Image (tube, helix red, strand yellow):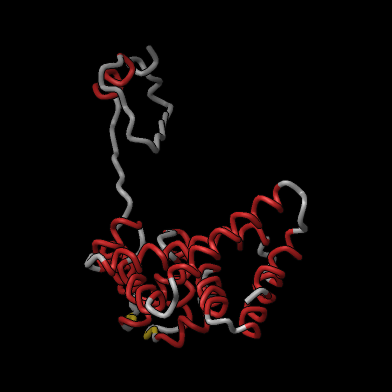
Length: 230
């Protein structure tokens, strides 16, 4: 009843993030008739790339292509983070270069986990423990890191399999929900690693995750021992 006779002094917002509206229901029919609908799709990488450049130009600044690519790599698709970093960069300089982004925009934890995963699979104990200790010093929880490492290994495995089947980078990115620019370095790295080893590491991580969550292994000691068994 309120939908059809709303209070004119009230702004009433309904937010729904699923695609399961049943158009046969009375309430949905009433909303369709009386409400304003805004259907917002998630931005593609190209749309994000264009919008970010436009935001920088709007602030009377410019950015080099490689700097913009690194900015989006470090911010992901978080619009608030991108907005804040653009504001900071434009205050720092009106001609943004890659080194400016490297200096001012902190890398995402996924970037460090990518380095950790590569060091792990390259059997480089020194770099593995260096990156791990750096992540722990930044207050990242071992369970969070286990999930991120597993995801990185899974991406290596899936990209490797799909590449061997002849899929193009854009098709792989679309199927896995990854940034198209991320596929080439993942595919390049995946070529150096044995598929069997990737699967073994994923299995070991699942066992470690279970052991930590059931209280049989300390999460810090468990992850350290896993990383040291290279």
